Length: 387
Image 1 (cartoon, rainbow, N blue to C red):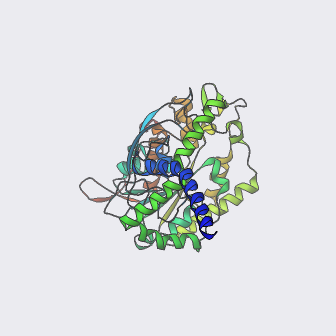
Image 2: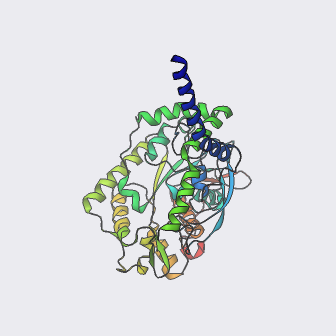
Image 3: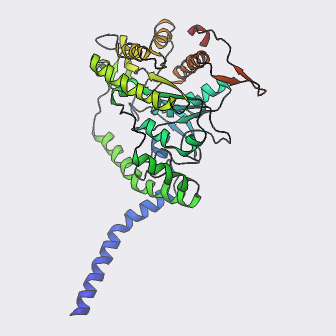
C-alpha cells in the first residue's frame, strides 16, 4: 500500500513537471537565448529594475542597448512616431557613460532627466556637460524618495559635487515627500548596493532574477492581445497627443503651494548644509506649454506661483515656463514629441542654455578645453541666441 502511494505521488509530480515545462522553457529562451529587449517596446522597460531592488541604480548596470521605439502615449497606434534610442548605463545602474572622475554637477530627477524618449547624446546631463566643460551626472530616476537616495549614497558623501540640480516634472511636484536623511531603506541599499555592483557574478544573478520576475514575455503577449481586441482612447487635440489633457492644468491652492515650497526649501537646506549648492528645476507639463491647443485654452499659473514663493524663501529656482512659451508660441519650436509627454531635444537644449547661464550667476566654475579653470563669463540670456 505504501509503494502504491509513493507511485501516485511520483505520477502527480511528473504531471506537474510536464505542466510547468513549457513555462520553464519560455523563461530559459527569453533570459538566455533571445536579446534582452526582445519582449519590450522601449529601452526604458528593457533596462529598468522592477522587483529586485537591491542594486544602487534604477537600471541594469553596464548596458549598451539600441532599439527603435515609440513614445509612451500611443505606442503601436497610428499616432506612434518610431525613432532609434541609444541607452548606455554605467556601473552604478544610472544612465551615464562610465567616467573615472567624480561629477561636479549632479542632476537628480525623474524620467525627464533620465531621458525617456531621448537617445543618449540628447540627455540634459550630456547637453549641459558639453556647455559647462564639467562632468555632469544623471542621478535619475530616483523616485519616489529622490533626495534621500542621493544623500545616502556613499560615493557622493566621499566626493560631493559642487552643485545639485533637483528636477521634477510639473504634474508630480505636489507629490514630493519631505526629505528624510535617516531613511533606513535607502541607507541599507547604500550599504548593500555597492557590494552587488562591484561583483560581476552577483550583478548578473540579481539582473537575471529581476528579468525573470518581470515576466516580459507574458506582458508582451497580453498587451498584443489587448491591442487586438480593445479600442484605446487618446487625448488628441488639434493633432497633438496629451497624457492627461485638461486635468493637468487644474488650479492649485495657495496652501498647497506653500506646503510644497516648504518641502523644496527643506531639500535646499539638506544639500547646502553639506557644502553643495542647490538649484530647483521644475519642468513644465506638455499641457502647460501647449495650453492653446486644449479646449479651455486656459494658461496655467501653478509654476509661476511656486517659483515666486521659492524665490521669496531664497531658494535657487530656474523658470522654464516663460522661455518655453517664447520658444513654442513665438518661434514655433516643438518642445515635446507628438506621441510622448516628455521633452524632446529642443526642450533639453533650451534648458541646458538657461542652466548654463544660471550657474554662471551662481559663480560656478567651469573649465576650458585645455583644462584651465575659470569663472564662466557672462552669456547672452536671450532665448534667440540658443536657437
